[in-house]
Length: 276
Image (cartoon, rainbow, N blue to C red; front, side):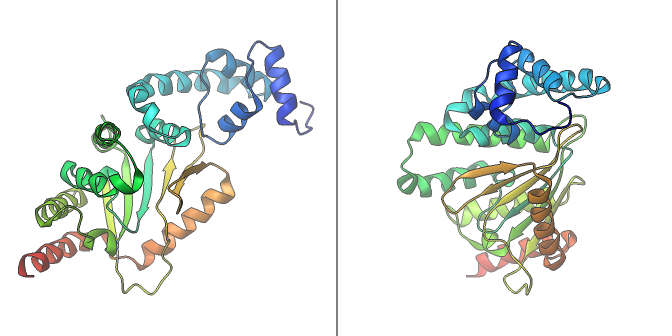
């Protein structure tokens, strides 16, 4: 490419000439990690176009094959997810580590089936979704949890910060919450799961919306996924955007309770609920 920047339009033209026709919109989605590369022909053409070193060719092809094989399980759920969420779910089980922040509800990977069902039931009228939609998402949530938390031979390392409000907000009823608190206490004792609570009284920075930071195996770059106030999900692997969320996570982690304090915090919540 003689060192000169190539426009997306020109890149699409070159790919088409090399037998890998895709649209500018699709190329943008691939570059933004919203969607993956669907065929080996497109991957080969892109490797040539972007002059990837020969030493990386086999590794990229192997990684693509691995990703396609591991994402087949999600095919049945794709009609119920946005493109960006589909890409995120496909990458999640392959992460080396995940950093999570959830201020208002328990993160999906940690939810018990009863908590998840009660959460969707409460949102059904507002979100205007069908029972079939909810059923699919409950199945997806359970499968994501299994693939991440129980991955073999080595589970994904998770560092999570949950806002105190996420733990105090009653979803379903008292029995649902008691079970959920017990589950969080159990998870917090696993070697690969580190859960911190960000108290209401914390004087430091706190984010308003959920986000997750996925550290992916080379040659993929670290990816951030963030939810917005409108319920949309956006993803980016741009280093400066990822760095901003890493700083936010580290700042909140410094003000949150230590992971070792989480079981006691949850026990106190459970005791408060019993005595009120």
